[in-house]
Structure formats: structure tokens, C-alpha cells
Length: 398
DNA sequence: AAATCGGGGGC
DNA sequence: GCCCCAGATTT
Image (tube, rainbow, N blue to C red; front, side, top):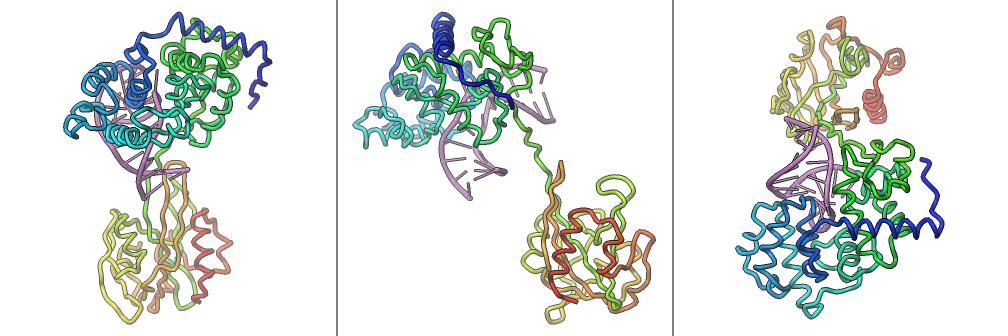
């Protein structure tokens, strides 16, 4: 986390001068750079959201032909509007673009407003686009933080904030404000964009050609590829269970030992029945009892009813050796719910409570055991099981 | 904070 | 096939 201290005035000035000069000599020739007209800048920035420059160019040129001025955009028929965007994706962008054009006609006399607050008030213009318009079109020293800027600046100053987190944006915003050229903010911001697109690329950056190599702390530390820090969205798979807290007449609970391999191996839990998300949600509201195939998530279905209690035979049949059960009564409502996040999946577990009044004292298999609550601490419980026990014991059902 | 919105390019 | 990319909006 050893970020570089702020530069002194002299170094900052040299950096700004060199960086802007590099841009002025090496900038990419792009259609929207032939003008400083705010409308053109705006349209280009909206098109460029999550979209590559090469893709945007023909769309931009046609769009400006079809809708040369804001009033043309504001008055455009929807089919023509969508046609202009056809193939670009994120079609809400163009709908918001027109809404904003109509906002400008109504509230700003057809002229793009200049202040960052007014620009931000327009539909479809978020923090990035507002900063881009303010700086590029109106030459105001406003940051325009996108993935590009975060990549360049994370390397330049070895900023370790996770760029995947929305909250990290303000860290980069602050740092850009410190070093942005007060004289040429338009060129400065676009210099970052060009650098990020052509030199300071996500993979295999071309540091040997970088104009700000001497200022780049990651480069000095030979650590460029470590930045930016971006935590992978490990999309966790959701798994739904019903945990069965079954109690016999000796007040013992049925526990199961998990398999010797895999997740939570050899640890003890209440019998867990995997169910579909829908079954889970149904039971959450109070189940009607169910049938279960332990090898496959199942829908719940009504078996029998007796006042508030439901007898469920089929669940028992799916338990290992559970045909010993004769008289198992379930409470209609789940008595608890827990979630637990593993590295790659998230458990949702509803806790069902049942009482066995037949010969449930029998030991079913060697992977199962009847254990009184006061003896739970003699077994190894994984975290989710601990959470379930906590909820069970807080229920005062026994 | 997470889901959603589209399509294309890179590996 | 998966990840990444000049984001904003909704939930």
C-alpha cells in the first residue's frame, strides 16, 4: 500500500507539460476530435461507453448526419433513432440520449449546459460522461474516471484499491484532481484515454514507448502487471437446502456425517436435502409438506395435514436407512434460516423441525447418530451447522 | 452493493 | 468459452 507521495509543484508541472505535449503530437485522429462542439463530444462519449473506438466511428458519423443538432435529436422519430443505434447495444443509451436532448430543449434553450451539476442532471449522463463533457467540451479541470483512467493511474501511483468496487472511483477522482493540467484539462484527459488505449493497455502494456515512464511508480518497481487490482467477480453458485432437525422421544437429534471427500468432509450436520429455488421459496412461506429425491432437487408437494403439523413420509424414505421411522411429524413453518458463503457457492438453508414418535431410537446407518443438544459439542460442526444449531436452540421448542 | 443491459475482440 | 471493455440505471 506504499503509494507515492504527492509530487512537488515542479514535478507536477513537468509531468503535465510532457504528457500533454505527447498527446498533441501523437493523438489518434478521431471524428469527434475535429470539433469542440459539446453536442458531438456528448454523442461520442455515450457511444463509447463499453464500446470500442473502431466500432463507434461509423455510427458516430452517420448519427451526426442524421441528427446534426440537438433539436434534430430531440425531435427524431423512435424508429429512426433506434436504426441509428442498431447493432451498438445498450439501447437505453440512445433512448436516454434523446430524453436528454429534450431536456436541453426545454430547460437549457437548446444549448448544452456548462456546469458539471447541470450536465449531470441530463438523462444518461453519469459521473464519467459529465466529467468528459466538462473537460473536453468546456475545458474545465474535471476528472472523467473510467476503467481506462483507473488502469493508468493505478500503475502511475501504485494505487491498490479494487477497481471493481464502485467506492474506489472517488480515490481515483481525488488523485486525478491533484495532477490534472489546470491549463489544458481537455488535452490531459484525452491523453489518459489515448495512453490507456494504445500504450498502457490491460495486457502487455508497451512501457518502453510510454511518455510518462519516468513518472510511473509501477514501472520503476517493475510491477506494472500487478495493476490495476481488480477482484474477480467469482460468481457464486446458489444452492438451496432444507436442513432436517429431527428429534426423537429421548430428545435426541438425528445427525449425519458428511462424506470423506469434498466440501466439509467428515463433518456433522443435520440431514440436508437439496431443493429447487422455487421449493425453497415455497417452504419459506410455510410448506405443504413434500416428497424428496435426495439425488435431485425436488419440488415440494402436499402429503398430509393434521392441524398445524404435517406428516411427511417421503422425506424419511429418502434418508439413509430411514425406513425405521414410523411416525414423523413436521412443523409446518421452517423454524429458522441461514445462509453461508463458500469460495465458489452460497448456501441457503431453511431449518425444518420434526418429531419422531415411533422407533426413531434406532441407529440408522454408521454415518448417522442420535445426539442430545447438550452433547453437540462432542462432534465437529461446520459453520453453517453451527448457525443452524444456534437458531434451533433459540426456538424453545423442546 | 449487485443485477441488468449487448456486442465485439482478445486469448 | 470466458474475460474484458471510453458506464448508467434500477433494485
